[in-house]
Image (cartoon, rainbow, N blue to C red; front, side, top):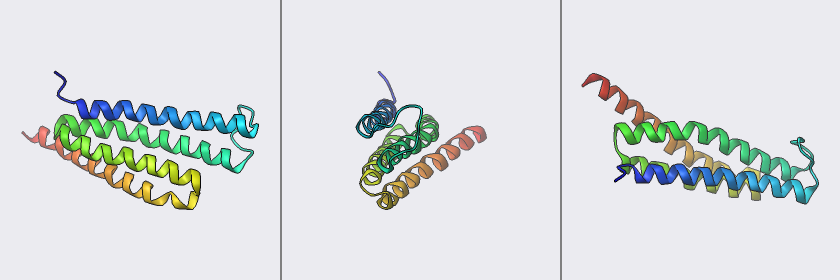
Length: 131
């Protein structure tokens, strides 16, 4: 039996979030007539593109801290903080799509969850080195 079902589920969910962001960019390209490889041209397309890129950038940083925390401290707490991060990133994306000025709440919560995972993971690694 897998001892890390929560982090594994969050890893899959993060991949689905990235796919959804990419699909949103694709829909905006078609709807607004933005031909690849252009990344500018219409404000709503540029918003969709920034949502995708910001989510990708954050996911690349999130996944390692999620797993280090899960492996060195607690799979349960990694799942709780990671679930908070994922929910906040969805909040961020939806808010940004409606009004870019409204994205700060989701961003802030996701950064708090990321910080908890990063600091906790660092503590878990240091604790393991000292034992």
